[in-house]
Image (cartoon, rainbow, N blue to C red; front, top):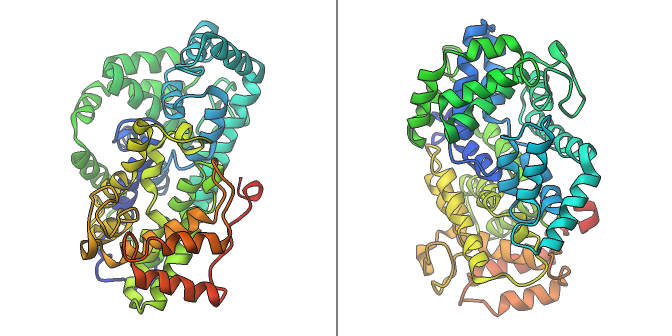
Amino acid sequence: MRPDSPRTDERTASVSVAEVFSALSFALDITEGHPFGHALRTCLIGMRLAERMGLPLADRRDLYYALMLKDVGCSSNAARVFELFGGDERVAKRDLRRVDWANYFKAARYALAHAAPGASWFERACKVAGLAAAGPRAAAELVETRCTRGAAIVMQLGFNPQVAAALGALEEHWDGHGHPRGLRGEQIPLLSRIMGIAQTLEVFAALEGPRAALDVAKERGGRWFDPTLVTAAQDLEADLTVWCTLDEHALQEAVRACEPGDAALLAGPGTLDRIAVGFAAVVDAKSPYTATHSGRVTEIAVGIAREMGFTTEELAELRRAGLLHDLGKLSIPNSILDKPGPLTPEEWELVRLHPFFTQCVLERIRGFGSLAVIAASHHERLDGRGYHRNLRGDAIPRGGRVLAVADMYEALTANRPYRPALPEETALKILEGERGVGLEADAIDALIATIQRGEVPDSAPLERAA
C-alpha cells in the first residue's frame, strides 16, 4: 500500500492499516451473511498456512491484507443474487460456500432451499426453472462481477497488482472448474489458493467443527484445492478449535499480532481517505438505487459544513463520516433495499438498525469514536423521534445534524425503487417542513446557499448508476 507522507493527524497517527481493515472486515462479513469474525478467522488460517509453506515476507504481507479484504467485492453482485433467488440474498450467499457444485443432487437441493423462500410453490418452481436456465453462465457472471470489483477496489486502495490478482482468482478451483477464468492447478496464484482453502475451512469449522472442516478440505483436495495445501492444513485442528472460541475483540488482537514484518503499516490521513472512499463504493454497489449515494451525501454535507464554518479538522472527519455513514446498510437484504412498495413493520425495524451497525463497526477503530457517533447520527431528529438512539437537540453531534440534512436531501433528489427522483424545489419544501423540528435550521440554510451557488452535485441517472 502506498505510504502516507510523514505528516499525520495526532488522533490517527497510532492507528495501523491492519486495525482499520480488521474492523471494516466485520461489515464485509454481514454483507455475505457470515457471523462477525469470518474474515479475521480466515486471515489467521491463511497466515498459518503461509508460514508452513515458507512464503517470503513480501508475499505474506500481500496475503495478509488480501485475506482481510477478500470479500470487498461482495456487495457488487447482491442485487443480481436477489434477482436470481429472491428472499434474503445474504443467506443464499452464505450457504453457497457449503455446496459442492460438482454434486448435482447437492446443487439441486441448494437451489430448491433458496429459491423464493416463503413464496407459493408455483412461484418457487418458476424461480428454480429460471435458475436452471441461467445455470453455469449465471454462476460465472456472479463470480466475475465480485472478483473484478474486488480487484479494482484493492488497487484503488493502493495495494499492488499481486493483491488484486489474488482477489481476482479467489474462486478458481484446482481442477479448472472454478470461475471466472477456469484456471487450473498452478495457473492459479498461490495467494488465491491459500485464501480459497482458508475461507472454506473457516466456514465449516464455525458451523460444523474443526474436524469436519478438515474432512471437507481433504475430500475436495485435488478438485477445489491444491493437494499440497490440504496436506499442510491437516494438523490445524487444535488451532481451529482455539480460533473458533475467540470473541470479536480477541480476534482483532490476534490478527493484528500476526501482521508480517517488524513494523505495522500506519494509516495516516491520506490512507484513511482512500479507505473511506473504497468502502463507500462497497456500500453503494449493493443496490443500483444507491450507486452514488455515499459520495453525493458527503459532497453535500461538506458543502453545508463549510458554509457553517467548520474547521479543517472537522471537515476532514465529516468527510470520512459521510463516506462511511451507511456501512450498516450492508446488513439489510436487497429484498428490502430494492422493494418497490411500502415496508412492513418488521422490515422497517431492520432498516432502523443500520446506523447501529455503522457505529458498531467504526467504533472498533481507535480514534474513530467521534467519527462513529457522527456517522451513526444521520437519521437522528431534533425532536427525538429519529433512530437508532432517539437523540434530541444538541445531544446529536453537529456533524450528525449536517449529515441528516445532506442524507435526506440526497435521498429525495435521487431515484428510489418506490418513486422517481423529486425536483429540487419539492425536496427543499419537504426539508422546510422539518425546519427546527427534525432538522437543523442552520444546516438547511447552508444547503440552500450551496445550491444557489451551484455547488450541489446532481444525482446520477439510475441507468448510469447501475
